[in-house]
Length: 247
Image (cartoon, rainbow, N blue to C red):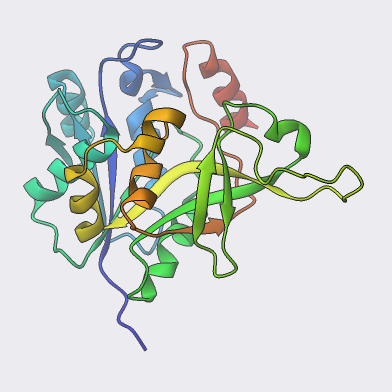
């Protein structure tokens, strides 16, 4: 039986946002949004510890006042994955450990989703995991909804904004489509490799950074779930999330 690796969660929290500046500090039932994400993430029993990784003193100070573990990171990272990697270096996380990149704008996060994401790492062959759920053909038409197709063993073959798989024969029965849920868990070694790679050709075409991993030969294991996440992208989304939390 393989030894289960130590698993940690890191929540990237940038102050700057084109659509919602200061989003991590937005009030959700009397606490900042990052706190609502943190309090749900720590309920996952497979995570040894969860930290906030920020680039802003205001967020850092608010986290400290609420006893949320926090690290300060460079404000100029090109992606959340790079911020996670810097935080992992600062924290001295072991190379064989697993880190979950937890979306900082999902205050209704389901801890069970995190458990499903890290469980596959009991196998030493798993380097990266992500989530997907079944959607219908109409939903799959939307290019803002990223689709993924998997191998029989559950590894991602491709991610696309297009409707995949494409049904060629008009008399063929429709198929299930998998919506990619953009949350990842990485072995530190895989995350290091990812953050040193330049943007890849397919990544530049589809504007999907996970394709950089596939083009580099780093396999992504896709876990299916019924979880339906809801991220806060704009200030007007706050009322929707409040109704969800209070419901």
